[in-house]
Length: 157
Image (cartoon, rainbow, N blue to C red; front, top):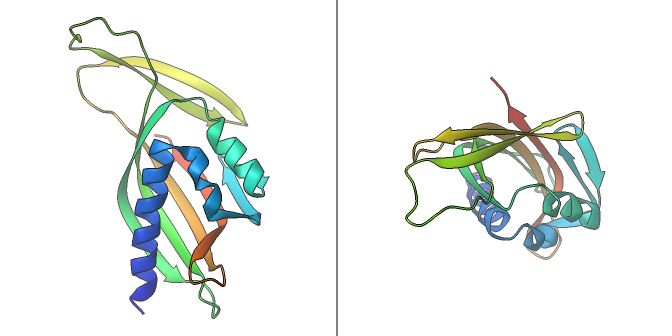
């Protein structure tokens, strides 16, 4: 019974580390029948999903996982993983040397398929945006799992 939780933990660590470092490397986790719904916009298939993730309008991001819950989702060994957390989007800015005490951050909002940028100043502190993400992992037949469903949503307010 605890094995699905171990798989979910390992998957989550791998997924977010890979996403934060090089999103294109997530392709191996998806299949042609996989579906991503990112901020209410569905995309199906490995190439479409990776294209969507790589085209997101930020260079650097850091996911901070707050909670992770998992359940078996089928008798065939599927696993549902629900993650809540916070993310910080850092957009590149020209910073003089030495680095000033104020750093400009740009937070991106997604509404109705459009991207909106909110810029603000912070004094050397992170102000992450909350998110939730749900994955359905299915066995790939070779002893591993792939992402069959992936739903991502920012939490406003």
